[in-house]
Length: 279
Ligand code: GLU
Image (cartoon, rainbow, N blue to C red; front, side, top):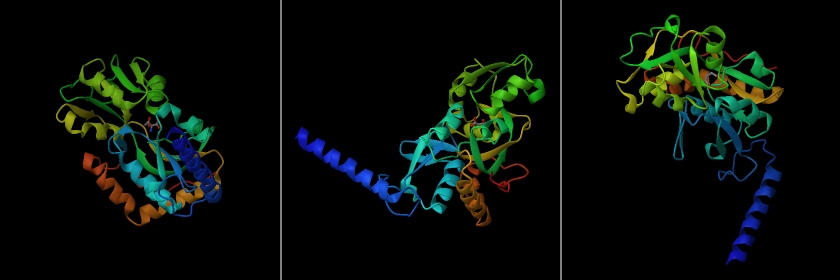
């Protein structure tokens, strides 16, 4: 029995290798079991409602919708997508080490990140905001943060912004944003700061109904890009063409309505953006 299972496993592994060798990963639609060469590894967030959320085997959110559309345009059916959790601080490394092919994870395009990875897009523009307890009237915007305790995520642009521009703020950094929520609710921290999209997604969760609110106006510009291997201009151009088609066809708007729209979030000025030239 044991031996037979071993043989079966070895045979399956050999088959997967053969398929991978034939497919070459260039994207003829076909296999839906993820074992063939048509698989694509896509990095998303797993804990950001409205953007990238995993519940069991279900993946939802705007980033997931854009990812599925782009993958389809590149020749990868939905079943060929392997979703990889991509926390903020790990995104560049995941791309550099080929653990993902593309990242759609509220990933702001910045010059320092461009030293390690390339970006297609932007496909969305967000802005940094503040999430506070519903009964807190002391934080009304970025000018009221002196002496406050804020929570954000290691390796994110909002955490960096606080360190650079608000030295009198006490910053608590976690690995993911969902870890900040219990600390906000129990009063250990005064506000969560990150993109307004992410904050709106959390605030709209049933479990937080009436408990949280966004304070003030967005105070940065976050251009969401699709992270890919540095210098892969060919892939970047294909992704940009797919994003442009998604917007032109109305699928971008429909995806917003279904995801962030359901969280009462209205995209700010400049949306949908035009993807920039690849380099
Ligand atoms: N868009 C910001 C960033 O890329 C914040 C959201 C996130 O951490 O994913 O750092």
